[in-house]
Image (cartoon, rainbow, N blue to C red; front, side):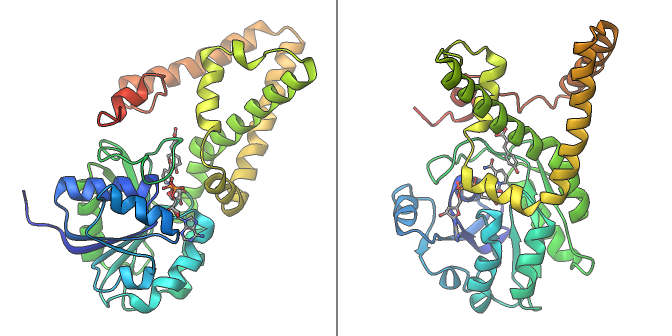
Length: 311
Ligand SMILES: NC(=O)C1=CN([C@@H]2O[C@H](COP(=O)(O)OP(=O)(O)OC[C@H]3O[C@@H](n4cnc5c(N)ncnc54)[C@H](O)[C@@H]3O)[C@@H](O)[C@H]2O)C=CC1
Ligand SMILES: O=C(O)C(=O)Cc1ccc(O)cc1
């Protein structure tokens, strides 16, 4: 096992992402001590039962005391309150990062509370599932996946290199982006697909109520893929929608415009247009597979593959 990258890592929030990090840190020997903090006593007790850390503190400021790396893994709407809560306990020179799905808002919420003596480097692993809580995590969640860091203009290069090495130690590939660009890109490739999934599943459910027929029972696998995304955590996705609203609304406007064009082609029986569009998108899917980036494909055997330690 190589030398640990950090002496003490503090994980604030121990749900799907926090607990996956705890497992990855342990598995990769990335830290000597893992400190875990959760606002909820029940979650903290569960983390202890699962043996995810070495020390457990309900008080986040206590958990981060003496930590060299602090990772905040809470719904994005709670980032400001958590930054405020940990500020007093932070060690000068510590790296403070997060995993939130939106970046500009997290920076705006956290930065004002953090002392100048720490290195604040926001981040976002592009890896997850529809599950949440400490039981849902697994050590190889980040394996072969991107982690986007959105460093601030005056970020210390050594701190950035250490955080990049940490994510690589978790199996991830690290990229850098500016926060606004991140929020725009993620709005189309992650936030919109979830919103569309929530919407289509809701529409089908309403239809079932109206027609009093079993719409969902007969759903084909395409619809089932949507139900997986639509089963994602409501608090997390409420916060994503509220904290990346500009980019999401921009992408929804483009999406609606394109959907109207599709609707028109169907109404006018414009088969050529439909064929042309479906051919274009099929090529995109095939190019992703050829590039070896199809590891995120949801299928119903996925859990058996992705959670080998689960029953
Ligand atoms: N679920 C996913 O697939 C992914 C999630 N993310 C981001 O990671 C972060 C955490 O998400 P998950 O681990 O999936 O969520 P989760 O629901 O599994 O865990 C959230 C954790 O935050 C704590 N928490 C909730 N509200 C809090 C508050 N007001 N103050 C302090 N702690 C609070 C909970 O007790 C729990 O420990 C979110 O910001 C999310 O956007 C990033 C990549 C993937
Ligand atoms: O479960 C899925 O398909 C996901 O897309 C997981 C996910 C959710 C949120 C993120 O910010 C990143 C990844």
